[in-house]
Image 1 (cartoon, rainbow, N blue to C red):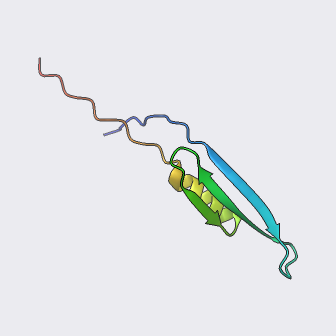
Image 2 (image 1 turned 90 degrees about the horizontal axis):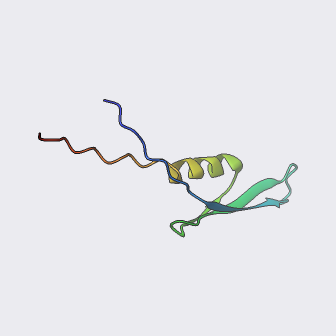
Length: 70
């Protein structure tokens, strides 16, 4: 059975910097902060950032409607 998903907005603060530790091109590193929960996560590359956002921004399922007993 299909279940409707509730829409919600999740706001993140993302800090990204380049690290030039004998690398060319530089490694992109950063920090992701969920402003809703206050959770902070460090990431080592953009793929990890994408994965973190996907996990933290998953939509919450809608509550199951109560069946009417008429």
